[in-house]
Amino acid sequence: MLKLHVNRQIEKKKNNLMRYLSAQYIFPVSAPPLKYGIICVNDDGCIVDVIDTGGNLKDHEKLEFYDGILVPGFVNAHCHLELSHLHGVMKTNIGLPGFISSIRKLRQATDETILAAAKAADDEMKRNGIVAVGDISNNACTFPVKRDSPIRYHTFVEVFGLDDNLSEEIISTAEQIEQEYRNAGMPVSIVPHASYSVSQTLWEMLQQSYASSPPQVVSIHHQESSDEFSICDMRLEMCDMRLEISDMRCAVSEIKNKKIKIKILLVHNIFSTINDLSKYTSYPETFYYILCPGSNLFIQNQLPGLLLFSSPEFCNNVCLGTDSLASNTSLSVLEEMKIIQQHTSGIPLEMLVQWATLNGARALGFDHFLGSFEKGKKPGVNMISGIDPEEMRLTAQTNVKVLVEN
Image (cartoon, rainbow, N blue to C red; front, side):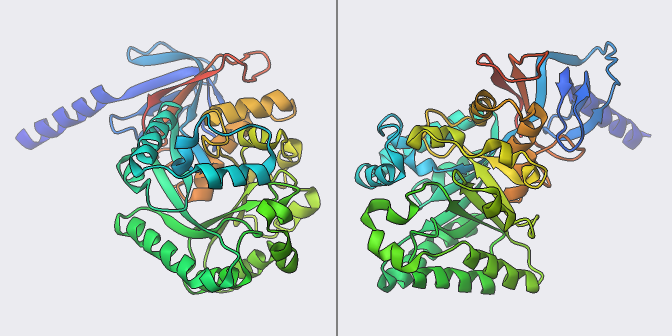
């Protein structure tokens, strides 16, 4: 009897800590929006239930009702945390070649400066409702920030270099950084910066590595600029090699023949056409398209074909990223969503929320616990206010508030 009594007391305590959250709409993402739906969340942030009230919300003594919509925590699928100290330093609209040249000249700073800026950027993302990040790293400087952050990071250790003679050194350095993350139990992959910025030998070494020990996720900058083959005065070298993303598709085919799953994040895609993207539709569980509109406008005042990515062939594999504070004014996935709606009227809010949450979680391999309101997941809960209720569109006044951390 005593044991039964104690169990009942524990259960009562758990029930007392349960939160019941509601709003004009709940966006489960894995299911259609629920008008006046309810999310039941325990004290650990775990989703206990998602209730469809049929639009008839009844009074509940512990119900928290919010004026807006509730969505899962955001996923920032592409970021460069280590460039956060360049916030406000870079000029706008200088084009990708000019931007990369400036980064090379200005990125040097003390470890203390880089770490302080990275920590502030990590805090900013947390305030902006971001619960997971795909982060590009050229070194291990930001490792302590990511290790101690409540945000879940997948680190992409980025390699580049056009001198074949340096390929082994470049790979060796990347492997050392990779091992540091692995030792801490943090997701990590070695990835190429872009098809134009790695030598033939370095590209082949990466493919051999993927074939022998495939990473779960890789990332590559893709069709970011019309000047990709003349960036930073590398014209002669790159005109001779012109590496194509088809090489990556060949590697994927080889890996899939071994029944090993791999995901490839194609980042930016500003100049991608339907013909370019149709090459990837044979691999619907492999290729993801990361859009970073804020950065695209900052660097070259140009956006991808947004309506193209909203088509049925591609929309379920589109994710959102902020890029870095060197190329953006903030690290806010919500701001990226607002930019998209400002520039096109054909993409519904429900699709944008999916791009900002579940698609990114799938791309990074975090979807078993993030990205949607489903029983057993801990995706975090964001409340978005200031929405046009008639059009179901974001406005200039739209803001996000974190209700439940993941």
